[in-house]
Image 1: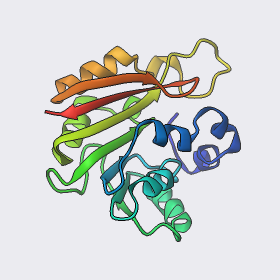
Image 2: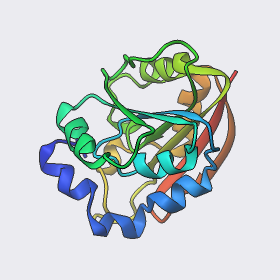
Image 3: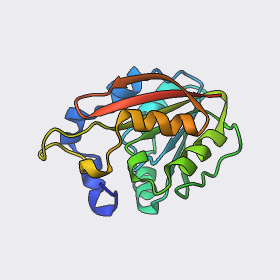
Image 4: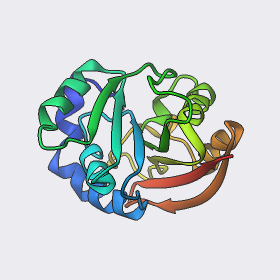
Amino acid sequence: MKTNQNSAAFLDSAERLQWNNPVEIVTAVEIPAGARVAEIGCGTGWFTFEIEKAVRPRGMVYALDKQSTMLQILETKRRNYERVLTLPCGENEFELDDGEVDIVFHANVLHETQDAPTHLREAHRVLKSGGRMIVIEWNWADEESQPGPPNTIRLEPQTTRELLHGAGFEITETTDAGPYHYVVQAEKK
């Protein structure tokens, strides 16, 4: 599913909440208070505000997206969230310094990249040494009626782990994240 203005309504839909609950997922990955988190591909802010609640009172969420429309929507929704900074980005260029963040949070994005190894090396660059990479991706669909992109562009968990390892990460955990997603967590070596 390539995101665009027409999909913004889907990204914030009540239907999505049933199978991609941001409160449950952010709680499960244990983002600590005070963390500096880069959310790559933040979209309209589905996970952004839950991450912001987790990092309070001193942490920061850098919400990055390559689509200005998504960032504009997020900006209109972030009024009560002081610990969020929206930043435009390229697919493989994040406007963050080397080692600037403690965590890179990456949900439903990797399967959309044109050059996953380069994209993940850029995520590696912005993470501090020992920092954590959190990748949430779509499990293989058992039937056509399931939400999400076609199986032809979904990534198997093993593929995601191999891509992360190739970019310099050490895999620490792979778990399910609801009925249609999995999470791979890794540490910057």
